[in-house]
Length: 165
Image (cartoon, rainbow, N blue to C red; front, side):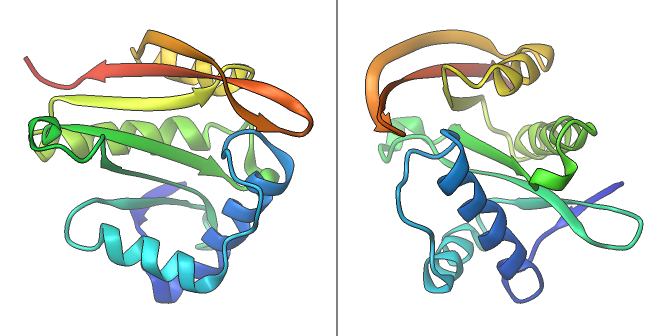
């Protein structure tokens, strides 16, 4: 497995597939409708030159998962804080892909001089919570019943990692 940057032209379709699988089958994304390719293109355009989109690739060069970060809130005082996301293709879960992606993403954020990385995780996503704790993230709080999907209320847990002093 190796980590490298993703580009829309090469990786947009598989990233769309990973996003849409998560939307349809999990509470990792609090969305109902699949993302069309125009939305994936816009997502890449928002990241370009500002925020990394890192992919984990197998020995054949196939994308197994991706991670990125973007602004945490839109206020000037939040400039040094980012909110991240990590998604792994359903065929590659449980293989350490998310761990490798997160390690690379954390290093990229440190290299960019950022101070805080925040993750909003559905409180029932035990695997993601365990991963974040393993990486040193601390639970900052949980917002109760702020999402509704699959006929149930969802709690959103926030985890944060201090990147610099």
